[in-house]
Image (cartoon, rainbow, N blue to C red; front, side, top):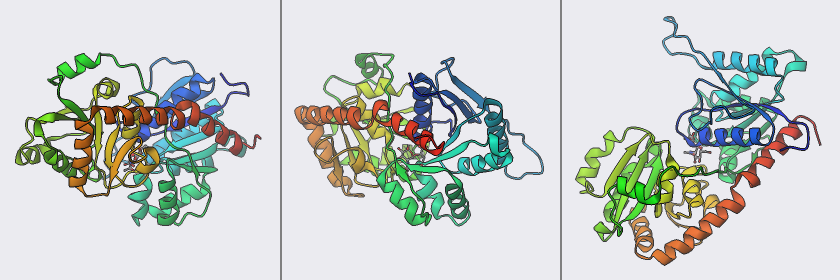
Amino acid sequence: MVSRPALKIGLTCYPTVGGSGVLASALGEELARRGHEVHFISYERPFRLPANAPRLHFHPVVINDYDLFKYPDYTLPLSVKMAEVSRDHQLDVLHVHYAVPHATAAILARAMLPPEQQPRVVTTLHGTDTTLLGRDAGYGPAIHHALTCSDAVTAVSFFLRSESQRLLNFKGPVEVIHNFFVPRTPRRSREEVRRELGLKDSDVMVLHSSNLRPLKRIDLLLETAARICPKDSFKLVILAGGSFAPYAGLVRRLGLENRVIVREMIHEIEDYLQAADLGLFTSESESFCLSILEAMCFACPSAAMRVGGIPEVMEDNVSGMLVPFGDSDALARAAESLIQNSEWRAVLGRAAQHRAREQFSAEAIVPRYEALYRRVMGEH
Ligand code: GMT
């Protein structure tokens, strides 16, 4: 519990499966556990947010579908709800995760309130809000404006900070606060999960979890799996935060029908993480890659392509293995070395888990956000 006065914090994120929503939910849960009052404002309850936890509240944003609008608008009802919650609960801080449209809505919400009711605005950049939308002429200036008007801006990696400064030409300070992950206790045993997946004792379980968006490069993931020898040494389990149907043809063409197991929209990720032996990631861009950290928490090392902030999360040959982007052959060799050598895998896995606990735990990260909130509020 906190020894200084508790804070009242509004949190906004995308509630669906995705790293920024997972991080924001965990942050809210941890802040409430530490005695702060936390108010989530979003169009749906974030999927990992516990029900009935003390000091944790959820305020839905209701969106009406007006015939006049060709495209439904979320930004304005979100900003109105943010202003309403800020006023009714005297929020100290509105902390938005993912700039678009959350940061713009927060700035507008603040402007709608009289000065004595205005919360501070903290914006956390997560990834494509900078690397994709930041390049888009239809978004870039609005993101730049929202960052400039924020009381503090954070980024989840040094990589993302420099990309934000470069792509958005943002000159203000950006504090790097890495992500953290708090694993829940799995609901089923490792054996039960492996049985459900039809794995033999000798099968090494290679795990990939992502939302399957184009930049996750599922084509490279499957190509890599097809290059791993011997073919019957592993099964690739894909936890898909979207439909895997578009990739079914490629699985067939690569002869991977008996190697690839897909589970869509799984919420009990810990069940699968504890059953996994190795993570495999082929994204072409990744500001952090929370999925790698999730695996690290269960002593599961990953083989991945060296892009974006991934080297800040795991160190090559110490807590995982990294290869140059696009080299699916090198990635297959790295995965093979870990599949075939369980001792090496265990060494990297232990180092990964240690690093996750030391650098990316709630204990290491949440106090950084608390300190930031107090700083923008003018407390010392
Ligand atoms: O930026 C996105 O594509 C969405 C976002 C999300 O909601 O999952 O992902 C980003 O935020 C995660 C949490 O901070 C990071 O772990 C991901 O690396 C990052 N995605 C990208 O940079 C592509």
